[in-house]
Length: 315
Image (cartoon, rainbow, N blue to C red; front, side, top):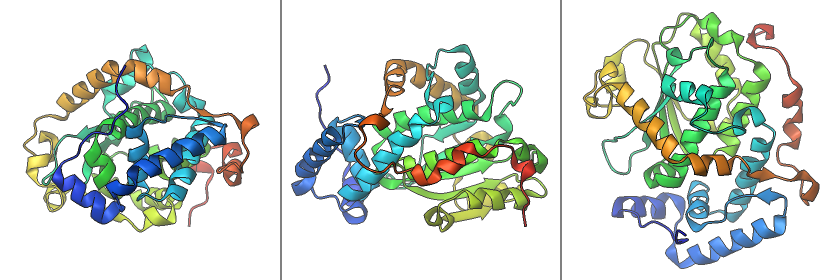
């Protein structure tokens, strides 16, 4: 049985956690105990209580116990209403493995400095709509995210920047996504996902993408709308102003080698963590035991919205 301990972190991460996240070792033990007590008294939450998981939540929420409670409740509540994402998280399932092999979401391994935000590469043109649904892609995205959140202290403390490669696909392609699911996914990824999102960089955007980005922004929280959103067109030179070649794959003019090697690495990593992922799909909330207000109750109208972007009238 593994010891319930917190991993030591580097001096650079310790400094950042102290200066930006209000981390103070004198208070950590008390904060962890307070959270465990809250989870136990809440009763409706079936969640993890190990120290590493809880300290990561504390860091993401800048050691505000109230913010941790709110985010953790949303984290588990929204997961319980998205079985299309949170059920069947077996990386050896034939369909799930095909989605993993697509490599739509690819965490990049390097940053320039040890306290820079980590980089997530999202490749829109890697999505094969005839093989799977967008919910399957979101499922793999959350599987990767759960392992990152457990293992990557730099990601937790420094946050993440996304490079979103649209692959110059026709903008009409994006209007076929189900709006109801996208709204639920937006809540999951923003309010519910324990992550410090630092910015979004779009490359290879198709003609007419302004309409799509307006929908993208409409699904963002006010906080995330204020994050850095940069469009690079098809210019690698523009991308390199923010992401030097030393941290990019070959396909983006970088020195790291082909993207496929990172897709393969993550396929094996997810398989190695199969038991963890399958166990985590059992976590969530039991509404019959809830004593508080459901944190996503105001969003219930989202779960009944049907149709795709094609039914929207966009100014």
